[in-house]
Length: 199
Image 1 (cartoon, rainbow, N blue to C red):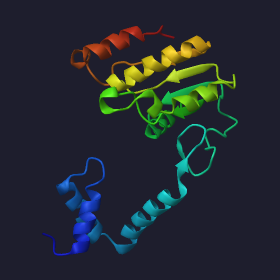
Image 2 (cartoon, rainbow, N blue to C red):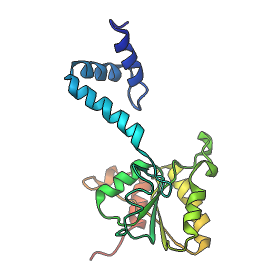
Image 3 (cartoon, rainbow, N blue to C red):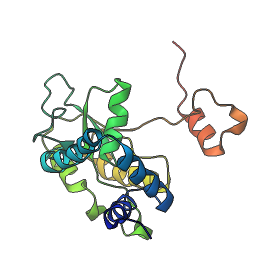
Image 4 (cartoon, rainbow, N blue to C red):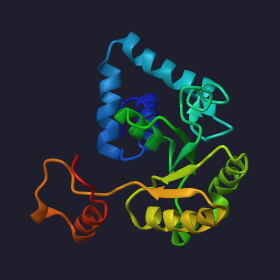
């Protein structure tokens, strides 16, 4: 029982966030309550603005303030190379590397029949429509290295290879700074498969 119904309401809303349980929600609520008013209101304003102004790019499915998004409309990016990812957060991760200069396609998830996610639930049809332009030469499948991600990559490769495109999969390997003895067998096998000549 809280001393304030507003505090209780805040805790209940915070608990709806991913990975936030009762204790974390209480800590966050207390932090916000003790924070300077301007700081808490800046957070509230940032949430309001993002909900009002950020939408989805009609071409790639990434979050954006404009349609098409900045990446899709950038003439400096290689329109012939398309990187297919599961979620918009994956675009952020790849962009942080500053190594990919092509464009993206966000599927909006991964195939998982047990969880009720089938091909028609993903943005596969818009992907096929993008490929009809003939502008794209290579599709990089950058789905997650888990069962659903691997199933999605396999499904897409079987769908796209007959079209005559170059279909590639991001390499998997041993993380920098780790020891081989602690790596799982799948990671080690992928690292061996993805080996390349030393320059």
